[in-house]
Length: 281
Image 1 (cartoon, rainbow, N blue to C red):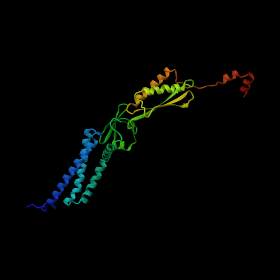
Image 2 (image 1 turned 120 degrees about the horizontal axis):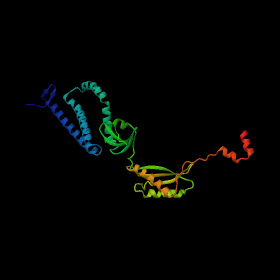
Image 3 (image 1 turned 45 degrees about the horizontal axis):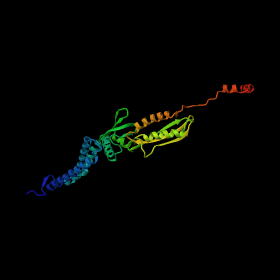
């Protein structure tokens, strides 16, 4: 009759096999539970194909770690394996350093979620819309229609500017009017135009005020808040409408002006003696 102490191979007994088998089953179950959790947590943050790859990698890592801790049940000297495995590990780690770094950064990006697909962002020198987020890299479509692949390590360690993380975004204009124009009327015209626009937010409310008395005219500053997703189209549209509204009211945007005094003109207006005295000097 085969007992638990029966030796199967070397020093390995039936009990060792049972303990190891139970350990492996538990490890697989834990890996499966974590995989299910990851799929639920990240299903709306990643594409299905990329998520499946990530889950498989995590499962393999968990199983390998679990098997490593289960090896002592076979009386295997883990210390010796560490020496051998350490040498191999150094070679593998050196060769796959960037891959592991990008993978880890990709996981942290998915957890922290500083950017999402469709966000308008700037990462380093690259600006555009996030097109795809993979395990190892992020794809950004620039404003020129060029697709740029950025390693996740660079994304994670770089300063990220997300232009649509806040649902509202402010922009501003600097509008000049002539000194002879009615400043109050100009402010009123612009405010009425902003109040009638469907995408100009009421909270925070727009602001129009005199900000400076310039060399050529009175400077009006206009602050406007609009939904982040449409702020650029609102900005370009309103700028033209403000110009047209001021034109209808007869309020002109002045050209730069300078008062120039000519020496010849001054001599003509001076008495003859004074003119000769200046010339002698």
